[in-house]
Length: 66
Image 1 (cartoon, rainbow, N blue to C red):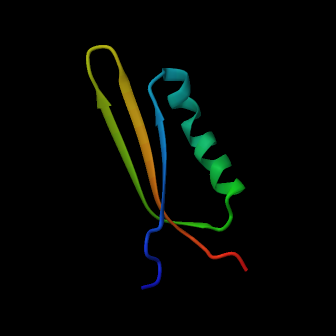
Image 2 (image 1 turned 180 degrees about the vertical axis):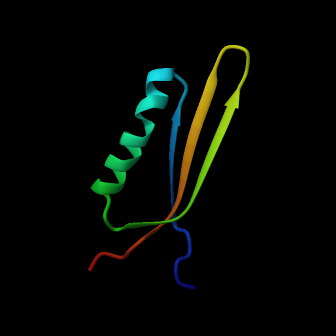
């Protein structure tokens, strides 16, 4: 079966400054991993009285080395 998910990358942040930089971190990781094809992205926010957590989960297919 082609494009079967075989790798998951999770980015999770709780601090306001980290949340602001999350997009840049994800973009840098994608650029540094050209063999990875992102099949699906899941963004989740959770919080309690003290913390707000933002998670970005990348469901991926890693291409075999040539």
